Structure formats: structure tokens, C-alpha cells
Length: 196
Length: 196
Image (tube, rainbow over all chains, first blue to last red; front, side, top):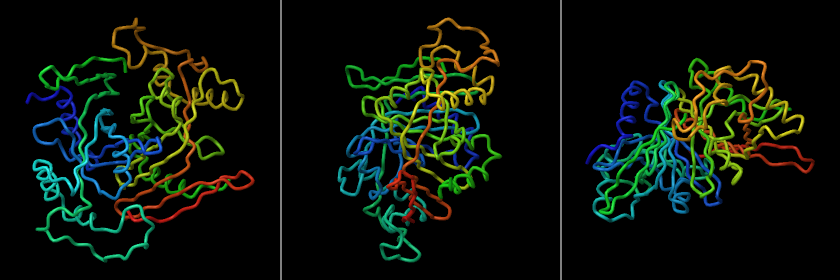
């Protein structure tokens, strides 16, 4: 697969910020069931192999699950703090949870689980995120058997990008990348330079 | 006015990050007229005097204006990169533009204009942001007379917070702050510790 034109810009930005621990942190906006926006930081886990989909992990007990069931659209704001580059990545979200038995999706979720650190895995065994503290019995130091497969609360979240609004504040460059689908079903990208 | 309990946490986080140029950068999510989310980086310009409202500046020609006219709700994700603290600030957005003649709002907008740098002011005279580059005549080096009042494109944007979801990842602390209004119209805050 040819690399999408915006991916090269994103990879350059990631490369130039990789010495910063926060360089994989980005913000994902969704729409709540009541029609209001929600926004939170996620850690970018790379692209799903052989695709342009951005990959994340999340807990099935968080509010974003309800948001996505109600409206599958998301917009990422990926802001690079040193170069003042911003990627606004708009697309469709897809959740892969424990009841997903389709072979490729099941494998993707298992791989993501075993790629996670022991500490990250333990969080999925913690008391219900967002519930009042102390309302559930505490387990003390949470540990997950390193050979155990994904806990039920563990989900993979992907975003399939449709449009990327790239802005480099220092260079005053703004480029809009848009995807479309050809007659034979291939995704192709067009790009246009915009006023910043 | 007593300081709202979450403001102390926010001010501490800002103080401990003030050596970083990006410490005033945050992400604002809105909902587009088509019901999909939007997300972008803004610069926090401080609180509106005598209130809890967060203040920003923006250009009347950007898409967020349409979003806000359609749905006035916004959620800020203010992520502090060194301490891994996150403030999700949910509330109502309000735009103050050139046709706003109410005295206090007019003064607020004028003050925000004169508090802006010459470079920031010049951006409001630039070609239409988001239009194809070269589609409008370029003005060369844009300059705005330093004594001139706000250009028509200059807007103040405020967010009146209703709920703040504070999360300190390193300390595994999460606190939800909620506002309510008393019988005599005072805004009061309650807080509850949540599972992270």
C-alpha cells in the first residue's frame, strides 16, 4: 500500500518529538448521547497494520463507549508542542471488545493486550473508572497473570481517517487532505493548501 | 468571590508548567452543525475578571463560529505534559463579536484586542482562514495600526464551566467538580473523588 501523503508529515512530527514522553498523547473529541461534545487525552498506539487506521486502547467501562455507540464519529487533535504542528484527524471510530469473535479483530485485540505493559493491563482489573472512590471493594495491589489473555474490560479503539487538516503554525502552512473512494473501492487522498 | 475549588488545582498546574511555551495550549471540542465532533488547539488567555469563565480569542471566519451558533456547548481538554494532569472542562460557550454593543462585553473585547501582540492582531487582517491559498489577493506584510481598535474579524470566546473532571495520572487521583445554582442565584461547587 502506498503511504498516504499526510502520514509522512505525521511520522516526521512524531520522529522530531520522540524524545518527549508526551509525544504520543493526543486529544479525541466525540459526541455524547445528549448531543454535547466530550474530549479527553489518549495515547496513540500506532497504525493498524496495512491500513491508515489509528489505534488506541480503552476500557469498556468509560463514557466514550456510550458516545461511540450513539455516534461513531471522532476528531483527533494531535498537537506537537515544539514545532507547533497540529493534525486535526476526522473519521469514524470502531470499537473491538471482548464479544468480537471475528478472527482478524480478535487477533488485533489480543496483540494489543500483549503489547501493553503489565501496569497498563492491571488498570483493566481496577475498580470501575468514574465510580465514586471506595464504592467497590479494593483489590489492593492489582496484578494480572502475564500469560492471561485480554480482560473483558479491554477494548481496542480505531479511527479510520476521512479528512486531515494539517497546520504548521511556525511556517504558516495549512494543508487539507481529503479521502474519497474510487469506483473499484480504493481509498485515495487529495490535498489542497489553505490559508492558515 | 471565593475561588472555585478546581481553580486552585489548575493554577498550580499552570504554575508548575509555566517554563514551557505550550503550557497555555489546550484543546476545545465542539459539535458541528452536521452533528459530528470538532477539535482544535486554542491558547488560554486567563479568566474573565470576577468570574470562572475561561477566555480565548478567535477569528469570526473560522468554522468554530458556526459550531457554537448551532450548539453552544464545549469541552476543553487541558492536559499538562510533565505532571500528566488532565482537566476536562465542560460548559457553555459565548462569543463576543464586533456587533456586540453591550458595554461590558464591548470593553472586554477591546481589552482583549489591546492585550494581544501586534503579530496576533495582524492575523485578523489576513486572507480568509481555511480558504484555498491564493484565492484572495495577498496584502504582503500585514500590519495593523497599533492604535486601531479591534478588527471586525476579532472575537472573544468564553467558556462558562459547569463540570470539571480532574485526573492526575501519576498520583491516580480523580475528582469531579460540579456546579449548581442556589435559590438566590449563586453558583456553588461540589466535589467528589472518583476511581481513576
